[in-house]
Length: 284
Image 1 (cartoon, one colour):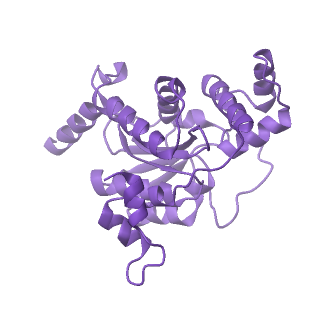
Image 2 (tube, helix red, strand yellow):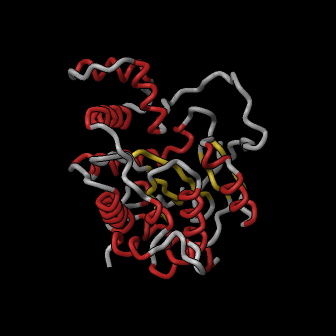
C-alpha cells in the first residue's frame, strides 16, 4: 500500500486511537503523516535551489559571497534576501562567530567532547544533522543519524517543518535498532538543544556533545554525506513532492550503506564496517 493511501486511512479525530497508534498500525511514520507540501512560488524556490547548490559546493560562503557568486551566473538576488532564505533552509557558513549572545536557559549548550578523541569503533560516537531538500512545490527537511567511525546511516526522517519531532523519531528508531552510542554529537540547532532530544539521550545514558557555534566542520562526516547525496541524487532530477523525495533518499542511502566502499574504511562499505566492528567488540 502506498504512503498516500496509508495516510488517507488515518483520522485525526478518531474516538479511541491517537494519531501515533494509527501510524503504527498502518506502518507509517508520524513525520510522513504530518507531511504536507509547503507552498512557495517557483521563482523563490529556484533561487533557494541555486543557493543550496552554491552552499553545498562552498560551505564557507556567507550570504554576501553567495549573492556575488550567483550574480556571476546571471541570478540577481540581494544579500539580505539570500540571508533570509539561508535562514529558512537552515544554512550557516563555516566560520567561528563572536559570542554576542548567551544560550536560552531552557536550551543549554553542551561542550564539544570529540576534540583529540580517537574514534575507531561502532556506537562510540553518533552524529546527527538536518539539511534542506528542494522539491518542486516546497522544501522539506531531512535529518540523519550516522555512526561516526563507520559512516553508516542508522536512521533518517523527512519533514516539512523544522520542529524537533522528526529528529527525535529518527533518534528513537536508531536506538531501537542499533543500541545506544556512548556520545551523540550535533550542532547547536534548536532541534538538538530542546528538551525532547536532550531527554531522550539522557534517559538512554548517552553523553551529549555539541559543535562550536557556526563550525559544521566539527561534524564533518555528515556534512560530506549531504554533499554526496545532493550531488549524486537530489540535483540530478526535479523532485515532484515529499513522497518522491522519500523514495529517492531511501534508495540512495541504501546504496551508500550497502554498496559504496570507502577508502577510509579499508574499501569496506559502511554496513560492512559497522557490523564487523560490532562483531569484534563482542568477541573482545
